[in-house]
Image 1 (cartoon, rainbow, N blue to C red):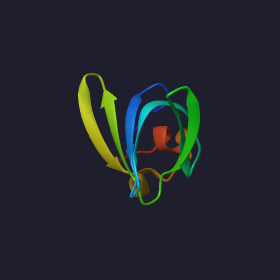
Image 2 (cartoon, rainbow, N blue to C red; image 1 turned 120 degrees about the horizontal axis):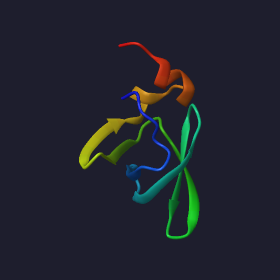
Image 3 (cartoon, rainbow, N blue to C red; image 1 turned 180 degrees about the horizontal axis):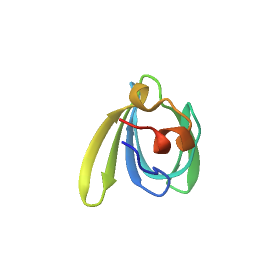
Image 4 (spheres, rainbow, N blue to C red; image 1 turned 90 degrees about the vertical axis):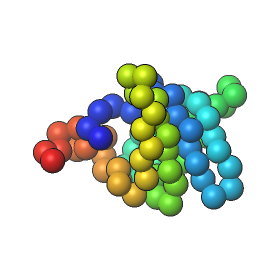
Length: 77
């Protein structure tokens, strides 16, 4: 996926919990998700993310998007 994740609704599925909210920041290894009025930093590795994008639900393993956001957007398939 070569789009910007910041601003998208997400369910972060970790081995211990599901965190629902909006992506407010992204680094190479983490997403920061605003959930219930607090920001939670969730590692990409070993977790799964369910995004709502243009009315569609997209599920992505975090290990598939371990890139800096600016590099992922420029990436050629």
